[in-house]
Length: 130
Image (cartoon, rainbow, N blue to C red; front, side, top):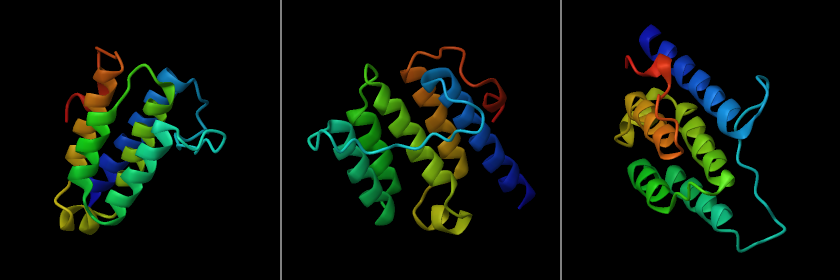
């Protein structure tokens, strides 16, 4: 249990770290995706809705695959979307993750992959040991 709590805290800190680097948010801000209702055809909004549906239905692996398939590294909203996605997964309890064939370690791996996709070649120092 302590190990999982530790991993959850590391994931939260990694999300904050990436939000500071890519989104220039302050410490107290969280990386949450905000729907942009001005353009109802927004690809990022549509992807966000699809990801939420897949998470809710327990298809986390499918959701993660969709995220990487549709990821647009030239769109700042996509980093926000990806951080929101992993934050939501991190907020799930261990039983929910296990039931849906996902783990905290996969969340860590996803964050590492996202950081590389968006050009952070050095990775996330405190996650590299995991």
